[in-house]
Length: 499
Image (cartoon, rainbow, N blue to C red; front, top):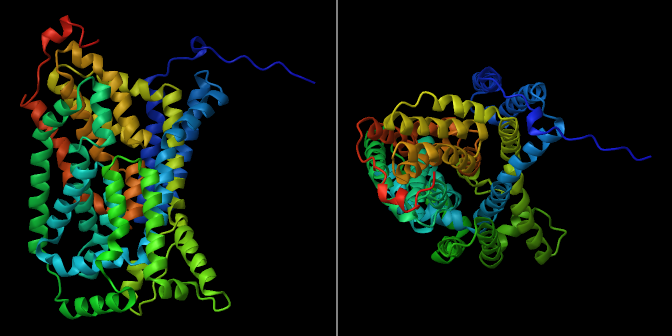
């Protein structure tokens, strides 16, 4: 027997949430996340944070239900929010496969092998930052840099006895500087599009905050490198190089998968197919140049060699590679990868996006943003408020794209009303939403960096100097009214600026 579908509540049936309504889930989340970190430390993202996010989402749903929102409406909000992160999740899984095949192919061991001979430990951290900055600037992707050069640099750092937490901070600092300043970056195109300006004006205006920030970061990494009290490891390095040479036979030809990824990224191919093709290139290299290693990795003498080869490559893609060099430290370093290694990270992102989706669809997020706008009294406070709102959006919505688009759309009219050029808004969006995204453990960027580099977000956060300094540089410019562009009045009269 058919039943008439219940009528959907109209927007007029929704009660406007109070500020208390909006803040209750946020404060509950902060308390639970704080408890998770206290109880589980760097392991909090392996399950504790996920529970905190789900419980906070439930609290937000209860408030939404009180204000007249149905479960179906909130469910659609969650699905829409998770849909935004789908691309990131696909990239995460593909990077897991890439890491597995690249280690098996000898690509990562080769980068470690040559890097240990070229990079000076005294300037290693600064060199990591600078190298990642240059590559990210050329290809416009911080994720690609972290998933390729990043994993090798962490390996080199560990082999040299250096601090992998500082190394991860240096990688992220350089990668995000290059990402921000590259006209090929998605966020560098998104921010000016939302604000209403062109990309090259946006990049020129960003130079004033990003260049001082990366200089400060490089000085910090140089100081840390020069003052590091590392024990002499010449013999250990020699032994490690000998083991790498014996096991993987490093050579320039094993860097082909890296060149494939960098070429495709430079040609602006989307990240997911780029990483997949890089994974397949790694598999081909493994089949051609590491045949014996692949067969030994399978540990099954009953299989024909070609069957064992296929099985080994398959395992590396879905479950990662397990090294067997005879050195415990090196084996631990090179036993990584596989799609399965990203499952916990995907779990975290799904829970975070569910919370963000409920907060957005029930109007709780907009209520917070509206209340924050009431404290704006002038141009300086508007820009500083923008920075704070974007950082808060990164925490609440767990996605840098949402943290750019939502505040950007909401604040655009206010910038025009206060006669501030759109480049001020676009720069503020990037100086906050883009650079702080890898500093939030449950944000898509923070989760990706932690999983890819094998370093917990909380562990590398104090050393991501560029990402930490940039918002403060931007806020100080606003406070002292330095390099704040006024709106060209002629653009209003000709209709180029739309309120």
